[in-house]
Image (cartoon, rainbow, N blue to C red):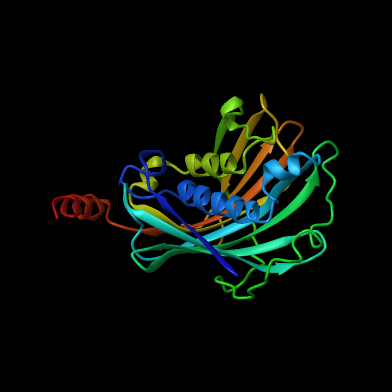
Length: 258
């Protein structure tokens, strides 16, 4: 079963070139997942009554083609692609004007809110049909070895980083990772792929330190995010492609005059 939902790119989800950001795209597919689960009374507010919570353990996304602009429509298509005792994997596509511009996969678990222990998920989702199509070539998404340290970026976790489960929202880690990439580099390079794996929970008030490392591939850094006591919370791998930023502004100007 493929579940779909439509969204509109707003100013909070666009970048300086008026295009949908990676964080905005992540928000869309995760909201679509929440709506999908709500159909089966398995949304976060349903689980919360039982003292349970959804948690995403990893997700990856590849961008291709024209990224939609502010005010344009985006359709998210999402489906359950595999199910084990404790993990559910979903694949998704983001579509604009009948063309896929982003695709990826994600893995979710259900935890006890108090103990953070995983609980069986398979029996809860057994009635949802599995559609085994995968959109990325390799769903294992191995993160390459981190080599030379290129720089660090620090972020103090605050109340705006906390979600309804009272823990740091997973998109905070992606946002901090993107902020760690130098602004001058991002002027002429666009994120084309990322994979993010969550390792340990961080808490409000802690300082999150993001270290950027080179890899054997050009324009493809590994980012490692830590809080106190050298506790690694998250690891990210990104790939960037060069682009001409002046063309993006020109495209938008022509679009708005039509």
